[in-house]
Length: 334
Image 1 (spheres, rainbow, N blue to C red):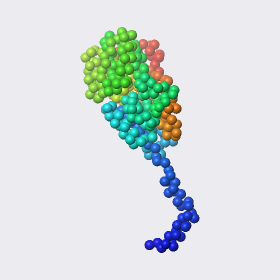
Image 2: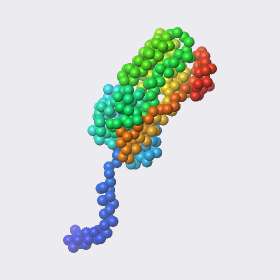
Image 3: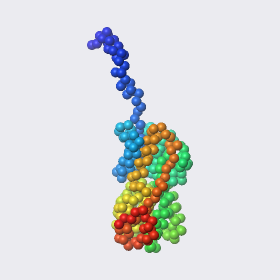
Image 4: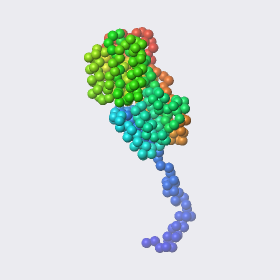
């Protein structure tokens, strides 16, 4: 037991050396670690590369997961109807900022909060789908990046038309769960098809078994080619889609280089790999954590588009690639 006089002496000693109390006081005054919410429409495994690049963008700006920032992950596993509840959960947890991948996740996050900053990456025009009012001055609590991949749908059809001479219909593969993108892409491609005198057959796929059914339908219709639409479900399966197209001897076009590199005939889209776009999202999230406002950060869009042609696949499919098209290609895979 400490006597009263000894206690006073000890207390007086501590008062005489306040530095002994500073570490405890400093810890008490330190702000809580900021928490980022990351909302994805797909599954974590196919998007592991994108998450890695997102963390890289944070790290480049001085934020390290588990060090000075925490990340709460929410994945819809392809079930887009789960996104509103997942977004609402992040809002209840009062995360500092929400990063989102894809149009469905962006729309769900936007509906869930008007105050927590949101940084997105999507393939649609964010003004057209109602995410922001302007690219240069987004206003509100959303900003981010767009590859404008949906707007390239007409061009993908034109490129495929140049490559395939058969008169059969051309398939357009879409995910019916992604209504905002599907409606815009279908209308654009149908309009381009009328100009080219081509028939379009829209095919729906939102699960693995649907992909096999879609290619079986193409074979039954004796389709001459396939335009693969833009959707997180397809985006994470570039290599699988290339393998299916090659197995079914179907000339097909998609947006990412990974598709052509894996045996797809042709790819046309933003000049980056599938994983790259999430790095700048991480940088924007870091800037918001440092005090900038989403409303003041302009939405950035891809400025470079790459055309990749797999000449080996073309020969295997008996497709004659025009010299003019080869000359326009950014890369020819032989």
